[in-house]
Image 1 (spheres, rainbow, N blue to C red):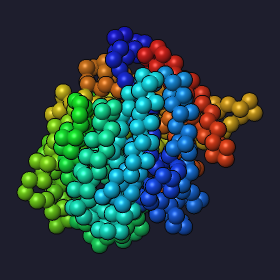
Image 2 (image 1 turned 135 degrees about the horizontal axis):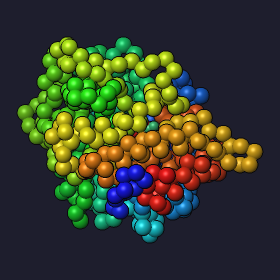
Image 3 (image 1 turned 90 degrees about the vertical axis):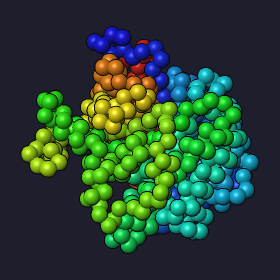
Amino acid sequence: MNVASYQFPAAFQWGAATAAYQIEGAATADGRKPSVWDRFSAIRGRVLKGDTGAIACDHYHRYEQDIQLMVKLGIRHYRFSIAWSRILPEGRGNVNWAGIDFYQRLVDGLLSHGITPHATLFHWDSPQALEDRYGSWRSREMALDFADYVTAVVSRLGDRITHWMTLNEILCFTHMGYAVDKIPPHAPGTQVKSLKEVWQTSHHALLAHGLGCQAIRAASPIPCSVALVDNPVIPVPITESAADIAAAQAAFSTIEGNGGIIVPALTGAYSPVLLERLGANAPDIQTGDLDIIHQPLDALGLNLYSGTYVRAADNPCGYVCLAYPTGYPRLHMPWLWVVPDAIYWGVRHVGKTLGQSDLPIVMTENGCAAQDEVNAAGEVIDSDRIFYLRQYLKSAHRAVAEGYPLQGYFVWSLLDNFEWSWGYDRRFGITYVDYATQQRIPKASFHWYAECIRQNRVC
Ligand code: FCB
């Protein structure tokens, strides 16, 4: 591997990612019933400009055209998610064959072009029926229903999908979907009475992950890879002095939600520092729960967009988080501070801080929103996105060059799409979508990324 030219090893996986609710549309087609995002986005004021995922990129009807885009891009790996309410419209019970059929057609199309499907089983769109029945993630029953849904999917698609991911970003759909004293910004948008109830939702999601891993392994007819996708906060040492590096490592397992999600999932125990901080607000954990949660994984997916600078401090935790100065570069989201080193440090922290040095890591999402415009020539020149992606990929390369087991990179996203409570206002795609006509226009970043893939290096 040539370090100076940012060349990646031959086996490095280049890919692109999407999620069902953000691109599929066809919300009522072929037996699909509402998910919490259908209900949430239909409530006035919840999503910017009243946008919903009812049509989105109409990928459900245009998936063949979208596979052609992937072929043009040159990716050999594609991450997408399966919509629970297409497979089990009521959340449990009868399997909807039309839903299975759609994903079979999609996957067969991918495979016929040499593209390996990486399927996320849950990317936030829980069936509304389960929210109505028992408050979805507020109930332990949700973890059991999730495992049954996983069995329904893997037993029918496991002959052609070998890369499975359980849940996407637990903290987002639990701690941003359930909140105390305010309406949370994510579906289902449920107000609860205590922080303990919020932590209980993420505990149930962890249980779902564990039971889901077991269900995948039991149902898959062929050997497969099982992963969790998480978005931990990444502490980046402000200098690479030994003291600041130690501070960043100390921060990794306790900063924000990390101690209650990635730490128990990978080590089998909540961070003691977090539990002490939570006190009576810590979730109820039943005997055996942590063993279920702590399943062996074949890979860890990291969704990384930004990072938090820390430095060593003479205080009980040994670090302080540093505020971003006014004018620090950001892309088109309030939280999208440009911190490329987050990839390198994210990979290194998992290996060194959590003692998982052999666990293969895949960058399951990285990308940015930009204020893309189609110019008079019909092109989208998103040099800001190229600038962003190039720096993050160099950071990924550093991790690989230093021997960390980073095996792949999926850009978020193949297409502009429904960006949750920001609706269609924020464009994360390397392909521009004209929502009025559903025309796809590959942006400059698409052509740049295709060249990186072709040359297997950061161009
Ligand atoms: C991640 C989500 C993904 C997308 C990007 C921008 O948190 O997993 O669906 O919204 O952010």
